[in-house]
Amino acid sequence: MEASMTKRAAIKRQTRETSREHGVLDSRQFMEDSKVRRLPTHAGWSPYPSNDDRDQAYLKTLKPKSDGQAELMTAIDHHNLVLALGPAGTGKTYLAVAKAVEALEAGKIGRIVLSRPAVEAGESIGFLPGDMEDKLAPYLRPLYDALSDRLSMKRVKALMAEGLIEIAPIGYMRGRTLNNAFIVVDEAQNCTYVQLKMLLTRLGWHSTMVVTGDPQQSDLLPGISGLMDVAQRLEPVPDIAVVRLAEQDIVRHPLVASMIGVL
Image (cartoon, rainbow, N blue to C red; front, side, top):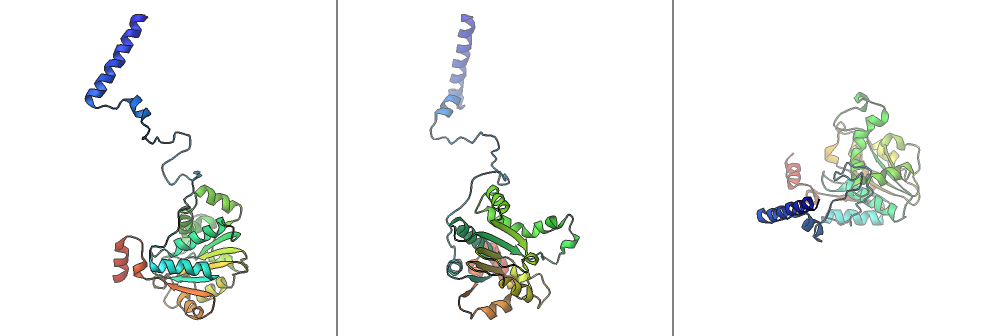
């Protein structure tokens, strides 16, 4: 047995010498290196953002990236009703949802209500497979994306289960009064004048409503969208802010601003 142990020790010593000679990592040296960050090994961990069970939240400090974004954030802080108009990529929806999450986490409001019309690129949900929830899911997905960038999906699901976050199409808003809430209406350029009037009059006590949209990207027939008309009528009203973002406020890839300028 002593000879066997001596042989094993000799093999280990030879392996270490070979590793040093050929530049192969010594596992003990690797494990003892205090500067090495080791990956989590507990069950359920995944490096992919699709892991909906993660507990980590992403409440980053919210900072404007343009003068227009700074104006929008200030308007949301000081007005109960804000209309944010501008081209794609200016952060209208993201900032509105981020402000809503900020208000909920600070206890300033009791719930978040996110809504957008189920109309996009001329498609009809009647031709999509599945029940109503399945049909609406693709249209509401951008709102989930904005939420998950500020909170973990696990927390989003928990807040939705508690009724503290609600995501619904425009048609479900009729007849409601939204008190103590932060309401975000996205893609409002796809709403008619009547729909927007109905939505705006849902605003209740201790609530904030932010309506976002790009009047140049309506999927409705010409003359049907009511966003520009509503914005022009409400702009002179005290305590209502209409913020107009422009191409210089686009924070996506620079090509987005270039394309919007020519398309």
